[in-house]
Structures are given as C-alpha cells and as structure tokens.
Amino acid sequence: MCTLAGCGGERSLSQLEAALQSADPTEHRAALDELVRALGEQDRAHKATRILRRAGKSSIAALVAALDDRSLRTAATDALVWVGSDHPRDLARALEAASPTTRHRLGRVFGRIGVGAVETLIDLLKSDDCDVRAAAGEGFRLLGPTVMQRIEEKLRDESEEVVANAAIALQGLRPLIEGGIPNLVLALASPDRPTRNIASLYLGLTGKDAVPLLIKALDAKEIRVRAVRLLGVLGKNAADALPALQKLEDAEDAGLRRTVRWTLGRIRG
Image (cartoon, rainbow, N blue to C red):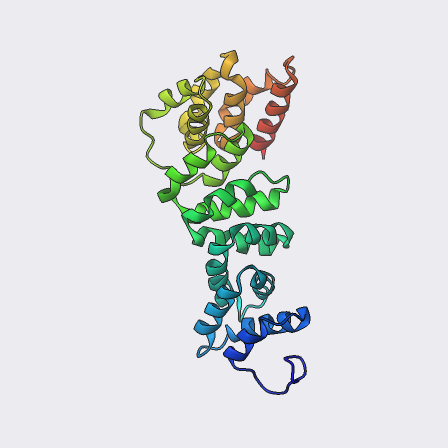
C-alpha cells in the first residue's frame, strides 16, 4: 500500500484527512505536517484549516511548530485560534512547553480566542515561569475590557498573588471604575474575599491615581499586606511610596517583609 511517506506526488486534502485515521503514528504525523503545509496554498488553506480543526488537539503540535515558519505563521495562527477554542487546556500545555518567542505568539492566539480563553489564561498566571505569565498577559491585553465581567467571575476566589498577576497583565485597559478609588481601598478590608479580590484587581489598573491612598493604607494593619502588594502591581507608577515601603523592610511579619521586597523590586525595576 502506498503511504504518505512513500508516495510520490501530492495527496489530496481528502486523502490526507483519511490518513489521519491511521493507527500508525508516523503516518498520522506525516498527514498533519502536509495539512499544515497546505495552509500556505491559497486554494487549499480554508479546507485544510477545517480538517485540522476536526483533527482536534492532535493538530496542535504541528501548528505550533509552523509558527517558526514565516510563510505559514499567519495561517497557522488562524488555525490555532479555531483549534484552541475547542481545546484551550491542550493549547496551554503547548504554550508551557514552547520557547519564549513561541509562548508570546501563543499568548496572542489566546487573546483572539476571546472570552472562552479567560479561565485558561488565569490558570497560566499561576505558573512559576515568568515567561508563561507574560504570555498570558499578552492574551489578556488582546482580550480587552469587554471581558472584564468574566475575568471578575473567575478571580473571585483566587489567591492574592493570582489577582496581582492578573492586574499586572491587564494594565492599560483602565475600565470604568464605579464608586471611585476611595471605595475600592475601603473594600480591601471587606471580610468577603470576592469583594477584596475585585477591589484589588481594579486598584491594580488605576495607574498613579491610587498611590496616595495606598500609601495611607500602609498604616492600617488589616490591609497593609494587600496595599503593599498593590503598590508592587503598579510598579514604577508607585515610586512615591518608596520611603514608606522602606520603613517596612524590617517588619516583624515574614510575609509582609517578603511582599515588601517584591514590591520594591517592581518599583525599582
């Protein structure tokens, strides 16, 4: 029998789709690779994309590899948006295993997927790898402010660190903040975690505007750690807080000292 690897000439797209059912992994991967190459052919690209989407998560590795080929990159990105919409967790695993440059490109793929990518992007913000978190941030920036309600829902019960990472990733969106910054600072002391988390998220998007009130909040023991972390989220915008933060470098509480060090590093760059 003539196989993909052994035949001369180009297979039709229908033949390639049939070959995807092969139990031979070499044959299966060869069919995927040829389908990906077909993305660069104007008369076959649309149908090849549909076939790759039907192939599901098994097509992700071949499409990710194609991102390194400038002639295929745009078409492979478009196809990954479709496949990733159906299999966001598998796309996230591919992102975690990819090179820094490819991670950035896959972050943009998540941004194009839309609201369905929010939960997966938030999970990527929990990574210990700063490149993975940066790629998730790129996805969030492309999602834009229209998905803020969904982001709020997903962050309601997350840790303070995940909320801080989300705020860093979303900086620049500056959505409309109802009630103003003073009310958000007051909400940091709420006994309700979702309320505290949403307040932290939006304070992290305010730029310099929240800095004076957050400096004052350092005097309030019950919200001090959150205020310190938020100043770190704001980064260089919070330079005015340096004198107050330096006074906390030798605080008795180890968790507070850790957060102060992180914040000072963010502000000083």
